[in-house]
Image 1: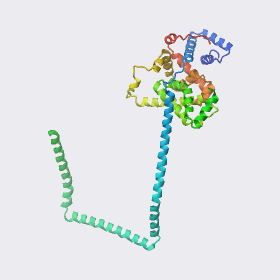
Image 2: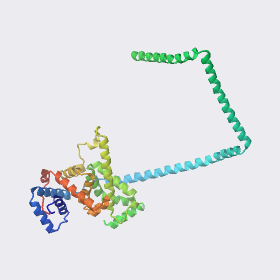
Image 3: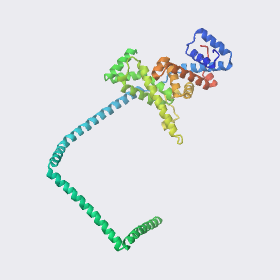
Image 4: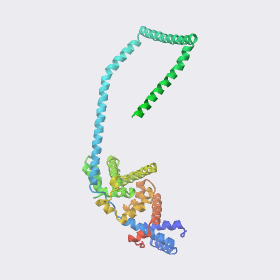
Length: 186
Length: 196
């Protein structure tokens, strides 16, 4: 168990922390003396330990504390500004609410009075129904006209469906060619 | 300055006395900056991190448990912040792997300031090189143990872990550091190993 490498490492670590008794430390040294590798590792661990123990603290550049206080001051001013903005927004919302309430009240009263009168509701319903039937008749008429046109003069829709895309192609070609000649001239 | 005075400074700060916090900053600036510098290995970033740690402490001063030492508390804030920065730095490195970032001109200046000149001694460079070989959690355990002389229990409390975990990290860290220590460097620095 004593010769177990992990146990040896653990005891070296304890020795660096001065957590070994005198007899334990002597036993460690005796064991280290029997192996060159372990002895070298122990030496390097001691060197690292000494290096770290003797390296002093590093301080910040001068004026660091003043810069921290200035940053805190800026933070406080920003918070104050944010708070002022929040108060402003809250007051604005309150004012808007106060101004809107009369308009909303009038609209609500009109709506309630309209809906509570049966004759007004009937008139509204009739208006919506007649408007809808008029729109449906219009669409039906349009479909009928189109159908008659296609049956009586089949050339017209054929010409329309051919000429429109062809016209678009010609228009694009002219635009493209005129653009190319402009670029060449430049 | 005693613990009681620290407590008084905290109480004065909470009562709105900003100057009292200034005194706390002056008292702990070296400890906080050193921790940030050892962790981040970059002076400008360490100053930013130290400043951020103090700002966080100021913003959360009401949550400070007066039963704890102020130093331990501020070091705990600093260490958490540094770990966060190292994580973010790793993410940036990963995302910019194919596009190397040009360093800021101020950081590439050949003329060192007085503080930089004091820092660029061989010992400090060696220590920072060695610390850089450790992962952040091991590095933190080493820094807290060696520069602040904190017990395993205190480190465990700060890092929100167990004493055995801290012992294990320090144990592994010492092994890595010993493996990486160049024998020539050690002799150049007059590091004579003596029996404890």
